[in-house]
Structures are given as structure tokens and as C-alpha cells.
Length: 517
Ligand SMILES: NC(=O)C1=CN([C@@H]2O[C@H](COP(=O)(O)OP(=O)(O)OC[C@H]3O[C@@H](n4cnc5c(N)ncnc54)[C@H](O)[C@@H]3O)[C@@H](O)[C@H]2O)[C@H](O)CC1
Ligand SMILES: [K+]
Image (tube, rainbow, N blue to C red; front, side, top):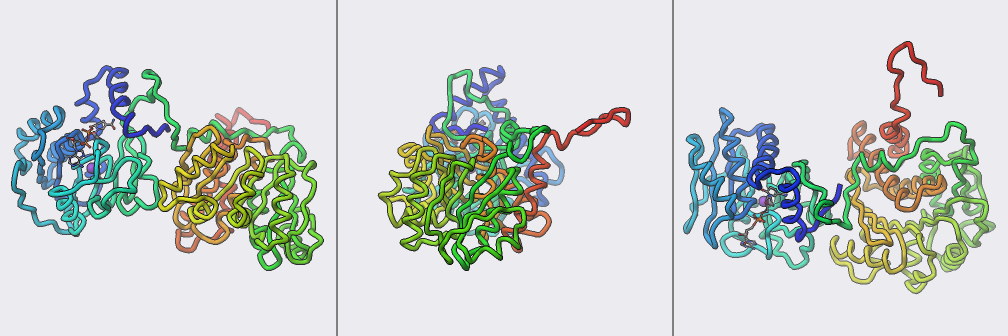
């Protein structure tokens, strides 16, 4: 699913109207139908609708009319017409609503007497959407503070009012609506996917209102939201005639003595992700624990008792992941950069690999092109130079990916994959239970397995991050987010692959057919 910028959205609207031969007010009606359907599904009977002067307000007034058409709903609507007048579709919906007998409707042109809002009411926030051009202030700022202080449940249409679509570094945070739920139209907006805006967005629901993909107007976007359909186009069926060799050989370089768990988690996840064979290079003293924990893995023992100290030849392997639990001692750092510099196979750098780079920023130049780096926000802050919030971390990751020809997986609630071509793919799976020790090691193992199976870097990043999140969701459904641990994610990887594999889902159409393997 493409994500278009604030600037492009009016053109997408226009393309939709032209391609589908509809009027813009019909598109607004479609949006309002989705929103009112959602609102009706909530167990509230009192809805207080706040409409602004633009099309976001138009949506809200249409929602008020549609909700009022349902018996038993108690609807109050306020339209704030205090500036330069209303957009034409907002005005048209004001006129339609004025004819509705069972709505208490007030158009505010000067003074506003705020209603009592109790916890049994829903505030429908239709003040401002994607047309916001500067932070809210004055009366609208005060109105937002009134919403946020009330005990009512808040549902925002398209955007929490006051939130800019992309960069909110200069915004006034207490003038942004703190929604319980945001129903966004068409596709998510970038700002809604940033961790530090979660307090405003709440639960994010995307209403597919059938918007154009922009092709007819030559519109393209560097942002995509990866959904199940995209993943089904990436994932390949396993070759029935394949053997261990044809599914690749992954090499993991991981763990000091005392951190063996990182290597174990990454290796198990790698083995569960379809690779033919996995070798782990780890210090001598990790021998017993790894042999016992993962009988399927081959060990390549570093001569040092306790840490990684010498690089190895990677010619016999198809992909390398380095970093989980690796440690950052001087000896290890030198071996790390030597290993990375000489590696010619697809490469993933994670965890302590990233910490070593943060300690030696000059070494970043020496990392081969097409390497995958997997920082979370704090690691990005450490390897980068100027990120202070989620959006600046994203822009820094994008710049670094283009400058050095890296793939940067910026891990978070909506993990972002930044490519050397300047594209960014947001992931749609995963949950907060996955913010737990070892979860990153699991992701590294999965991606290393996919690279060894000859998925391209873009495919391995998108598929790996999606599978990791889906496995986390499957595990959380069974166990709850609170108790989730990294091993549970690994346990759920098979089910995640099963859900995505067309072949595994294939059934004989009747008992007369026998599908041979
Ligand atoms: N394709 C879609 O996704 C559809 C979206 N719809 C809805 O339309 C809005 C966007 O409408 P637009 O009229 O462009 O913008 P807004 O309603 O958000 O606001 C415009 C209005 O507000 C004034 N304004 C802007 N910033 C400020 C400010 N800081 N303070 C005060 N006033 C401000 C501006 O001058 C205008 O008057 C989208 O979000 C959806 O909700 C369609 O209805 C369906 C298709
Ligand atoms: K809104």
C-alpha cells in the first residue's frame, strides 16, 4: 500500500474522482460511511461531533447525519465557522445536516459554550485533517485541551487534529488531540507511524475508501506500508526437488561467553526460517551450551575462550549475520571490522555490531554496500549524529541508507526499512510484547536465513520483518503481550510461514483428487 505525502493527497483525491467518475462529495460520503460504521460498532449511545471548516469537518458532519439515521443514537454536532468560511463540501454537508430532525446542531461563529462531556460519550474529532498547515493555537488550541481533559472517548477522523502529516518537531504537543482511536482514510500518514505520536493517534485503523494508486496522474511515492498481499508476492514456494544445499548455508557470528542466549535465539530463528544449514561461530566456552541447545547447528569455535577474536573465510556460506551478544571489547571490535571488510556475501549487522560502529564511526565507510543494519531508535541515535525524535531518526536512517548504500531496518512499533534507492517500507505486523530481550536476535536470524535462500536484500528485509511481527502476533494471541518472550516468537515462526504460504494452504478440491507432493 503506497503512502502519499500531504502535498500529494489532493492530487490523489482528484485522480480518484476522475478515474471513478464520481463527485468529491461522494468520496466524502464514502469516508463518512466507514467512520460511522465503526462508531456504531462501539457500545456508546451519545456522540458529540466537532467539525472544522475544511473537508475534515465535512466528513464529521456527514458522520453526524449517518449516525442520526440510526435509532437510539443521541447526536450533538458543533461546526466551527469562525475564520475564512467553509470548504464547499463542508458547506454542502452542513446544509444536509441542518435538515436532519434528530440532531442537535450548532454552528459556532463567535462564542462557544462547551457541553458537559462524561465518560459515556464519544467525541468525534473532525476539526482538522490533512489540510493542517501550522500548529493549532488560540481558540482551537484551547478546544483541543478541553477534549484532552475530558473523560470522553475520542475518535479522530483521518488525523488527530493538530498533528501534522509528517514532521512534528516544531509542533505544540498540548494542542494536539489525544485520540483513543484514529480512523485514517486510504492509507496511514507518516506521522501516525512514529512512536512518539502514538499518544495522539491511539489505535490506528485504516479505512480503505478505494483511493486511486496515483498511476493515472504519474504520482509515485517513496513510502509503502507492507501488507499481507505485498508479502504473498514476495514469498516463494519451496522447491520440491530441493536439498539441504539448495536452501543455503547461513553463518552467524554471535555471543561472548555469558551471552550464549543471543546466539541460541538467532540460530533457532534462522533454522525455523527455511535455511538448509546454519553454522555458528562463537567462543570456545560456548561449545557445550550451544551443542545441547541446538543440535541442528554446526559450530565453528573461535580459539578465544570467551569472545570473538579472529575473522573467518566466508566463501563457503551464503549469508552472514554478525553482532548478537558479540561484546564490544577492543579485540572483538578489531576482529569485527576485519570480518566485515573482507565479507563478500550478503551481510547483516545487529546489536553489538552496531555498538562497535557507534564507538568507531569512521569504520562505517568500510562496510560493504548492500549491508543490512538493524538498529532500534537508541542504536540509531548512537550510530547517527542528529536524531532526537522518531521522525528525525527516520530521516537520518534514510540519508545513511542512500549515502552508504545500506539497508537500514529501524526497529519499532511500525518498523521502517530504508533502502539505498531512497525507498521506505513500513511494516504492519508486531505488537508491544515483542519489546523484550532477544527479540532482535530472532529477527537477525530470520533475515540471515532468507538471504541465504537468495532473497534479495529488499525482499529479505520486508519478508523477515513481516514474519517476525506476525510470529509475535500469533504468540501474543496465545500468551498475551505481557508474558511474551523471544523464544515464543521463534515457536510461532512455523505458523507464520504457514499462514503466508499458498502451497501449504492448498487443499484437494474433493476426495476424488489426490494432490501429490
Ligand atoms: N482522499 C482522502 O483521504 C479524503 C479526505 N477527505 C477529508 O478531507 C480532509 C482534508 O481536507 P482539507 O479541506 O484539505 O483540510 P482540513 O479539513 O484538514 O483543514 C483545512 C482548513 O483548515 C484551515 N487550517 C489549516 N491549518 C490551520 C490552523 N493551524 N489553524 C486554523 N485553521 C487551519 C485551512 O485554512 C482550511 O480552511 C482529510 O483529512 C479527510 O478528512 C475527504 O472528505 C474524503 C477523501
Ligand atoms: K481530525
